[in-house]
Image (tube, rainbow, N blue to C red; front, top):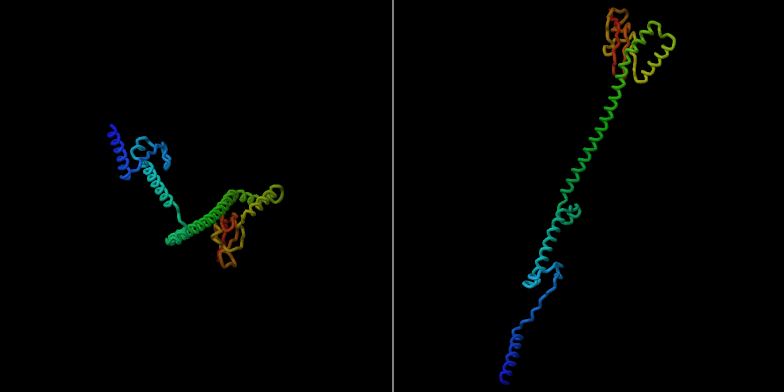
Amino acid sequence: MPHHGNEEEHNASAGQQNTQGNGQEPVIRDNRKVDPVTGQARHPEGSQSAPGAGSQAGAADSDGDALAQAEEILNGVDVPAEESVAQGAPAAGGNAEAAELRNDLLRLQAEYVNYRKRVERDRAVAGEMAVIGVLNSLLPVLDDVDAARQHGDLTDGPFAAIANKLENALKTYGLVRINETGVEFDPTIHEALIQQPGEDIEVDTVSQVLRSGYKSGERVLRAAQVIVAVPA
């Protein structure tokens, strides 16, 4: 019996020596539920089968996403011309774009100046046409005033004063009467109704005005109807 006991103690000590001689280290299992690297929860089967494998895969995925986001940000950033030159990139494209933008600005400015001049000119023409329309509508009234004056009805009295005020007011708007006699006949402002031989004249001359004409500035509103004396 004592012999068997010594034999068992000898076998146990030999097994311990063989284990130390093979260089095997004790296995340490990490049973923490949260991965200290990624901060993600661990699954029991993943922690038992391959400890640390899930954390390495998560870190690799996060690094790939960060690189992709960095590339997108860099692609969307415009580098100034100075920085591009410093980096070795040619700045000719930036100068050409700046010149094109400057030409567009100058063209727009010229178009605006022309547009403003055209608007002012159209406004002036519209105002002139409005005045001419009013003057043309009052020409029959002026004809009646002339007829009354020729018959002696406007020599004195309130109606004569009203007629004078009307004519003076129309003169302020550029209305000019065409009723001169003894002047050379001008077909642009005169309308010859009758021709008769004249004495001591060398050119066609207005001898009598049958109906007065009117003009506003250089625009003839109505030609004067006249009798023309021609050289004999």
